[in-house]
Image (cartoon, rainbow over all chains, first blue to last red):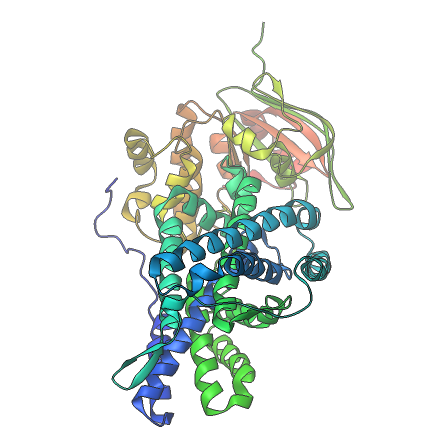
Length: 333
Length: 242
């Protein structure tokens, strides 16, 4: 259908996106050298991409289902542990200096992480979340309870000790570009993050399923009134969001080169900061917010390490002073 | 033998939280007509529509639609059976374009071109703002979009809650014309309205609610001609609402 010509088409709000290069440029004069700035910027973007993978599911679940899932961190942890089990079992393939051999270990690890986290998400939606739809206080209580239970189960299955996670040989180490050391793994994290974001953007903006999700985030009741079973959509989004958190968990565990039962819970404060900065329920906002948080954490971590976490809270306050409902607010009914 | 009404409510009760809103509602919507549901604020009109649509569950009584009981039927299934709902707040998806709003409402695939041309004839603004964000439309245009969305595919029954709320008189005149055209289509309509001029212009039959009950049913023209009855039922004078 091509009706209408002189039509005010939907325009992208570029201002929040422009914050990312603006922030990088503002940080430049404070750096001792250009290579340091390049290294920190790549590290910040990589961290931001990993945070985005972990947070994207949480923001969709909140936007679509109005559920504050404080147990989201367990999907990160379980994903990280599932992948670790596969990677440790395939240690020889990981240590081989061959990309093919490395991939033969990494791909099953990623699939295992996403499958287990997705299954746990399905179980959570059916058993823990479903009885408390529409009741935020009980949601917080039961999801916190679920978080504690799963963390203890992780101790039972994988033990209480920190487990080292081997990085594949071909993405270990750095390469030098114009005196700037860039870690191979960080570059990979940026690439994976971009792929995930583009895939999500295409699904949300180019498919009927995405149209339904975007509409459901705004007004779930109206979507039902149009004849769609929103409950099925809820389950699908919850499972996909959990699987994505599992993927983020693997990336984060490989980044830290170790995994412990609290790996997901430790990220929750940062994830909520990202959600609030981006606008609750907004995937685009979550992406921009995650990159901003990653950059700020890395710049301040280098310039003033004691201010690292505080700087993210300051960033959130500044964004909310500018846009009280976040960078890309969702018009919920 | 008289035809069975398209929709009938018998002794319908609805509780919303601790409040007992509908207290034994009985009325019918004939096939192919426009039934006005009138009443003062808080009479239970919106609750009646939401109960029919399955958004609030009836705690007692029975709702029948097109020959089948639908009291416990889930909302999506009711929509698939041909009931469309336009809520009081219009329920448009502000972050989606006009095109996306209508595409979503057309469950059977892309909207039919002929049907769209018919809708554009009713509401030219929909064509003009086809790729514009629904959230940027004016109040009247949003109402037009909400109604367009309800009729983008053929429906048997349209439930419309206060279509003239907050609209300028000139827009209301356009809306009356659009509803006249809708009456000529295949759909039956149940319209909640506060604007008596609008109701009198379009209604075939009327049901009046007060305190969660139906207190009057009959022909709309008969109510329009009976000013004392209007005063008694609605507390208004027709002259004031011309």
